[in-house]
Length: 469
Image (tube, rainbow, N blue to C red; front, side, top):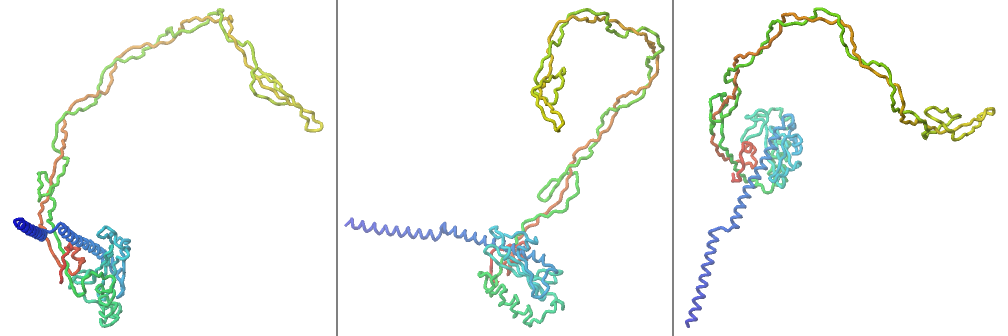
């Protein structure tokens, strides 16, 4: 009986404990988000931020195309007839250097043929359509241009701006009756861009340029733009340069420069060279007369006789013939000379060239050079004998004497004089300008356009917040 009670008690406690654990787990999951939930929230937040960034890049590209088109379509380039249009593709805008290359959010270039600007002439104003196609995203804006009170000439139309009175000639003889069905401004005219049934109307669902995800025609939305102006610093003009030191600070800008200037003089002694003429007496040699004298002029060799002596000489003792390898031909060999000998080798008889001509014999001979053979032999010869003698001759010799004369010569002297030399040094100059801090601010504006070029041009950026008008 005791064992039975024990088993029942343990089984009940186990289920109670399990129930408490399950409740605790569910409570923890309800109170604290899971890691997957946190990642999902973070991912959704990043996607919202990226969406705003992508829309901003697209809007900036549209604004660049719009501004370039307004600058290009001057009076002479505007369509002249009511209903006429002029179109420029993005490629043509590149060729005309109106804009730099436009890229989408991923850095890929926008489509140059699908992207375009188109200017259409209305009765009293112009309609500018700016269409941009980048990647999978394509959209457009409509801007109206005309002559308004706040500008000279043609400019962009602002919200709630009345038109200037049109001149009678502005229709160019076109029907101006608004009820005329042929009038492009007649709402019932199918060609009127504002006609809801017009396929070119951006609000027409059948318009291929109307993206399916745009808000319904009857609903108007406001898009939030925000301008964040950071703190800025504005400074006055630079002061004049001065020698007094100025220290820079947050509100004082300082520039320095060094100028080489005269700082004083230094007295030094410098050498000065002077040349002057001085007279002085000197001894001068001169010829006072001549005297006849026998003067020794040198020596010479004189032969006084001969003597027999044995000497060795190189003499010719014989001649030999040396073959030269040369061969001569002719009717007769030359005579031998002291230098060459000729020896016949063959003889050849040639008949005469006419009936009464004699036969002629032609010889061939070897040519030898004749060379002497020398020997050294001892011979006795008469050899001259010489004697060295002194040679004298009679000359008129000058007699020299000395006398005192006065001459003038230039003498260079060096002296030292005091001189002041200028001393230069680098002098530091300062100039400054006082500055003040202009506090930044933030401004929020709501616009009916997702691509408000006016706000974008002023530096406003989409925040991603949207509300119904």
